[in-house]
Image (tube, one colour):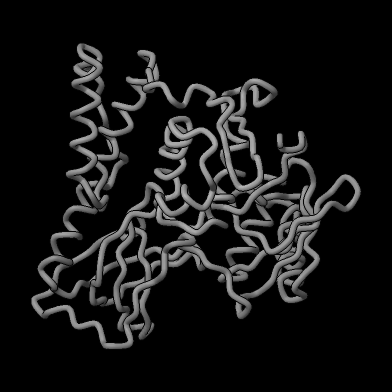
Length: 327
């Protein structure tokens, strides 16, 4: 029985090993046409339901174009499955020179990025690709990391020595600089930015400090001593994780300011005629005030009331400056 032509979305993978299983599944099924789904599931050590979800995902994978003749196709006859079109996945991957060079540069950059785990695996993969690409692997490509790498390495050394630090830090949300003593816990990379995670003695809480916002730092003689309640942040969803206790800002944005919905996490985005109604959580209303004032007339602030009042007051103060004649 051939599946219907309309293909429905499937659930996202739930394990890190799913990609490897999907890549192995096509040649496995090609070598065993008509195999029972239950037998294939047992060979891959997954449930029958999981294997069926894998087959549904494979069914919407394929070559650019994504039309008939581009996507992987299969025939399901009861509980048996046969691959009828493999979209070339049974053949070894052949990189053209541009693709190979891009991959070499990306791996070189990754190998030099501070805080990246499994560096040995990256270097082994890079060595294999450079060897396979021949002269292309020796291309004189200079890989330079963003500024601040030396500072990140120096702070990591302090963390490894388990010493406390005194830092001067710029807090963008409040537009202020402060001095504080911290007990370092770890250095980590999120995206392309480095962070120091430490127990802040002034705030009496675990804090994340962006390394490029640490204006000055000093290693202290005393050992770092985070208390037992100093719990590392869960970074699986990024640095900023909105919660219900944070202020909720509601704005109406025009076409020129819609980019904020892609740059900042939003609770809800819905159309309102030619404009969008956007709600988002923020850590500090002062930061939201500076952001929204910078967007000008393309944004109308609807709430909360205290933010509306602050922006109205600052806008009126600015207009008063134009109403006062120059001496």
